[in-house]
Image (cartoon, rainbow, N blue to C red; front, top):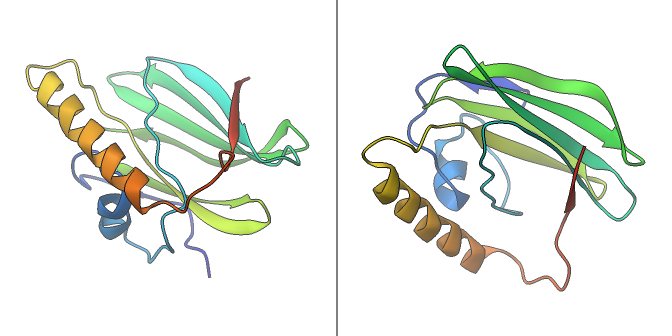
Amino acid sequence: MAPSTSLRSEAGDIALGDEARASADAGVGPLADAALAFGEAFAISLVDDAGDGFALQRSEEAGRVRLEVREVTGEVPGRVLASESLGPRDQLTVPVRVQGRDRVLLLQAADLNGGGGPFEIARLRRALAAAARTLPPRHEPLLRAHAR
């Protein structure tokens, strides 16, 4: 059974891969992918070959980050799965369906522009590389991204 959408305040620093799985409240399955996205505002869809998946929209609001996740069917964003305002240590858990399988997004938002930014960026790069070593080998990415 997939976990429900939830927001956990003060979950900790940004986590990737198995570290993110361990930090999630609900049990989640094996790691399927790991990624970092950055910028003040963006809107992207991540879809499989059938054009199904999810869309992410990020915007800044009153010192926090608004993340919206929508279901995508046939390349068209539809139903809102989650829309939450996150602080720098919050974690949003959102169940999604990708390639006919239930998956779980673990989303976090942080500002890396402070004095510790370069060290945190280096830590995240190492975590991303470690997560990549545990992922199943693929000839094609699980999802393709495009701007909305």
